[in-house]
Image 1 (cartoon, helix red, strand yellow):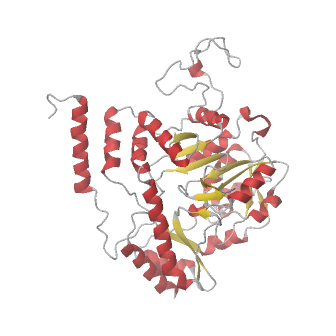
Image 2 (tube, rainbow, N blue to C red; image 1 turned 45 degrees about the vertical axis):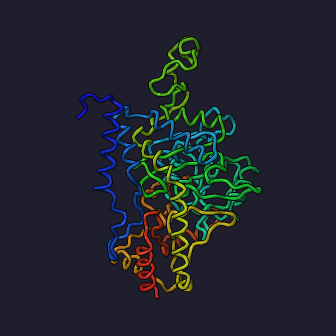
Image 3 (cartoon, rainbow, N blue to C red; image 1 turned 90 degrees about the horizontal axis):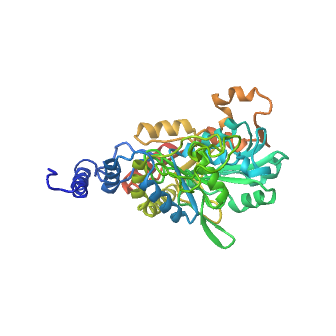
Length: 445
């Protein structure tokens, strides 16, 4: 087959065949029939993702490489931010973002064990896990309904002399009140980490200018797990405008090393063997000097290749999510005496992750959810509901000073007992949304 062909010609033949393979075996987006199971999220892709994946695999570089560099550059340009580091998951992104703030390079602003970080219990656990893992103290604040984000009126109550940072997510794509939270952080010299894993493409207007969420705080994080706004299968990103934070992020992601050479690159600084570090011998190989206790959190080039193709579709994905959300909201408005419908944060344009519903008094959430699941409609709770109630907190509840609650978590508990959500992902059709609306109307009414 490849006789007389160059390597590039052979590759083009393979990629053309991949395109045909996609059309024959994967292009099934229009095959929905009423009554088929409706997932809350699915991958949306075409032959370009598959071609990129095969292209990267044929190069057989396997670890981070050219596609990774291309993705980081394109993603940073999309968000209008200076620095982006690709990692292997959104959870790793949150770990890396928080660990960055524990670096000795930050001097007095570094987070130390026992320092406090303001966050919420109503969300996904990996926003909180890095805080606990390091030995810092999460301070939990209640959320508001129907925005499902941090109650800014409780921020001052959560503050103490030990507070060093705020680390919270934009719930279901709905931005939290960035103006208030950013002002609070600036006033008290606190770091702000935006967990942007469920909100890629959401926008927020601040001081007369519009920004993407994840770019207003000191560090933002994204996830590229299949249900999210774009996917690599696994994958995530950490981004910032701060050059020092970027230096720390890169070090911690790449084993904690001091050297900035890319994988496979040597002596970029031209001083590999002529400096002294720590208590090491003079001239110790800089590629093996470690300025942090780090990890290997890099993604593969094959993941990045998929991400590059997905990034070309991101604006369409965002617009489709927004359309689907508005379609569902209009179709369910007449149920507002029975259900609380989600409301966008003021000054924001959410890129919705899902459509969150909260049952009012007299409506049994479990009954509604079980009915929808029986009808083939996949549902999800608002992640942990109240993280403090979970078994993972059993031993922490018994440890004095392991965490703190500012005020009460009454809304958090209400959400835990009464809220659920359905999907708005870009692959949803009008027929699918009509079916979901009809089922919700029937069980709620």
